[in-house]
Image 1 (cartoon, rainbow, N blue to C red):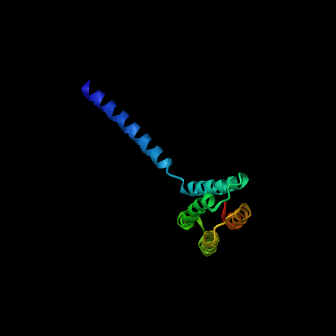
Image 2: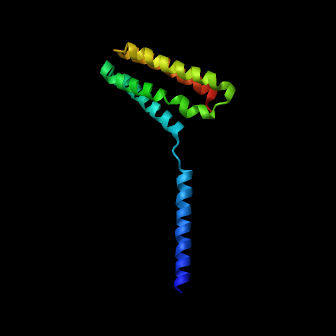
Image 3: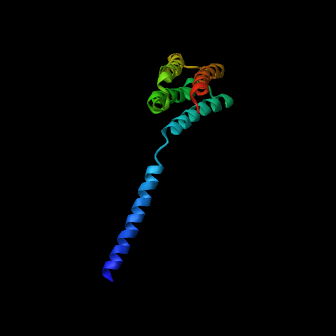
Length: 135
């Protein structure tokens, strides 16, 4: 009777452990989606600042700095899913986006028109990459 109980207990623990392991493997972090979500958050915050007329440098530079920091992760996260012959073009587009953000940070926008212009340029860089590489 004891042995049967131990065998059943062992099977239950094994099944529970297997299910937990399979769930952990299946629910791995989605880094590409996370990166895009964070970039969207900061772009939306800049857009909200324009709508609310909060366009002082101190309102927008933190979001631009966050976008710049996030742009460093674009290539490491997405390069694995890019065809070998397109990797150089992808790298160039990522570099263009970083250069656009660097240019904006070198002369931070001080009014809503300048923030809008900066967002247009950064958005163009994002869109050019999405048009070619987004699935």
